[in-house]
Length: 436
Image (tube, rainbow, N blue to C red; front, side):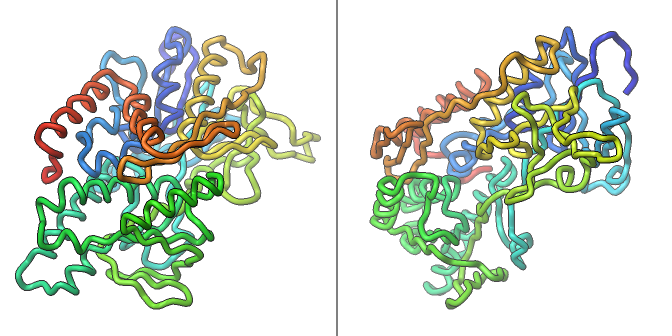
C-alpha cells in the first residue's frame, strides 16, 4: 500500500470486538486505517444463540466491516506474519473457495500496528470433531445450526423413521458447560417450548439436550450457589448434564465418552474453549507469549507488545515495541491476566483509542479493567447474575438483565431497531424460524 498522505499508517489485524471498535472510533484525521480480516462482517458473539433460535434476524447479530464513506480500508485477507523490525505485515488473500486467489500474497507497511485476531475453537485434538461438530463463532455458524436443527426435525417426521431413530436424530449434544454452552441450551429449550411443539407435535417431545463437560460442574466461573441453582433448574426442565466427562472420539452419529458407553446424537455443538490462531502461534517472531494455557501475546499495562529478551543485543526482556499493540482474546497483560470476554476486549479497545487519538505510544496511566456483572440465561425466563463484589442474584431479574444485552451489545441503530421490531413480530405472530 503506497503512502499517499501525511497521516500515520495504522493497520488493525482482526475485525472482532476490539478491532471493529478501534476502526470505528480512531481519529482518521491522524491515521490512514486499514483493517485486515478474513471476514467482512463482525459478529456479536453473545447474540448468536438468540439469532439461531429465531429471536431476531441473523443480520442483527453482525455488522459489516466494510463501511460507506471510505473511513478506512478493508482488506479481506489473513495476516501470516509480522516483521517488527521492517514494520511490515505479510498477508494472504482469504478466499479458500477460489483456487486462483487462495495463495496470492502481499505485504503492507505500517507506522502503528494493532494485533487483535481473536481465537478459534479448541477441539483439544479430539478425532472427528472438526468433521462432525458445529461451532458457534460466527453468524454462518448460527445459520448452520438452525438449518441442521430443522433438517433433523424433518428427517424425524418421515413416515419411514422409527421412534428410536427419531430420538437419536433429535438428541442435541453440547460439549462445553460454560456460559456459551448453557445459553445455547436455554435458547433451544425455549424454542422447543414455544415453536417446535406446535410445528412438530408428534416428534418434538423426543428432543433431548445433553451438556457434556470435563469439569465436575457446569458454569465454573460462578459461585457455588449460582451454578447449583442453574443445574437444578435445567435438570428440572429436562436438560441432561453429564459432568466429569472426557470425549475421546466423535463419529458421524456417535459420541465416544471415555469410560462410558457411546452416546448417539443428531446434532453436536462444540463450545469447549479457545485456541490461539496460527498468527499468534508462529507469525509473531520476537513477541513474548504466555507459556501456560491459552497462548496469548503478552503486553505491558499500556497494551504495547513485549519483546523476547535478546542476550546478544543486551535487551532485558522488558522492552516493548512502542508502536505495536495487542488486545482481545489473542493478548493479555503480563502479570495481570484477564478472561477472554467481549467486555474485556471492548474496554481495552476504548483505552487504546484514547491512546492512539492522543498520538501517544504510552498513555499516562496503564489500563485498568472495570469488572461488570456476569450474566447467563438458563432458560424459561430464569438466569443467574454475579457482580464484581459479593452481590449475586437469580431468577427473572437476571433473565431480564441478560436479555437487555441484545440492545447493549448492538452497535448500530439499524440493528437495535431490527431487534426491537423482531421482538414485536414474535409476540404477535411467533418466531420466523423456518426460513434462513
